[in-house]
Length: 176
Ligand SMILES: Nc1ncnc2c1ncn2[C@@H]1O[C@H](COP(=O)(O)OP(=O)(O)OP(=O)(O)O)[C@@H](O)[C@H]1O
Ligand SMILES: O=C(O)C1=C[C@@H](O)[C@@H](O)[C@H](O)C1
Ligand SMILES: [Mg+2]
Image (cartoon, rainbow, N blue to C red; front, side):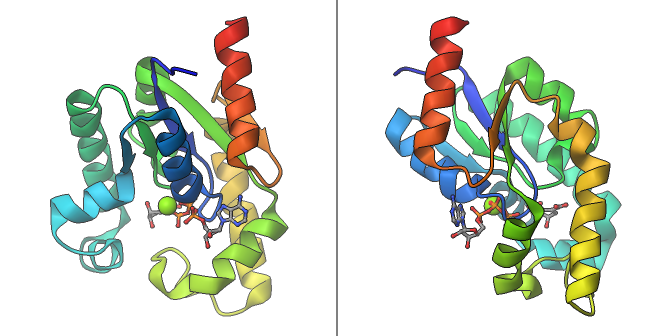
């Protein structure tokens, strides 16, 4: 299969955007980019440091700017976006206009299990005191973001795999 457009993976933290994005890019023989990594390279500091020093509003401005520069310089790629990317600065409009957003709709219990493994390097999750608060936070964040994620023309439900996404893309390109 040859994908002519950029593929943008969107979804909650822990949904598998980076892991599946890299595997898909290899299979599609397309360049792979990770927006969080691009931001770190641009700012020369970690995402944790950006949030701690300059706050979320600044992070969202940088995120939007780096996204625009990347899309201009790399017209065909598989891109793992950040978890909040589609929800700020009209980024979802841009993603829809320049490629194919694919939403990884992973169930909350599975997200929680994955996120528990590395809470400390996630700026929006570091101060959450206990399991109950983490569950509430992830559920509330998803509820706020859902309307942005739902604009994606492609959606992988459940525990997404490369095979499942491959099948979605094949259907998309053969049925139009
Ligand atoms: N399909 C999958 N099945 C099981 N585990 C997965 C799957 N995809 C990813 N994981 C695991 O879930 C964790 C999060 O995956 P990943 O880092 O790719 O998510 P992400 O959406 O890029 O999250 P973020 O960038 O917000 O940290 C990793 O530990 C990864 O190994
Ligand atoms: O869900 C979020 O808002 C975020 C997810 C990460 O990918 C990073 O972009 C950052 O930690 C913010
Ligand atoms: Mg990632």
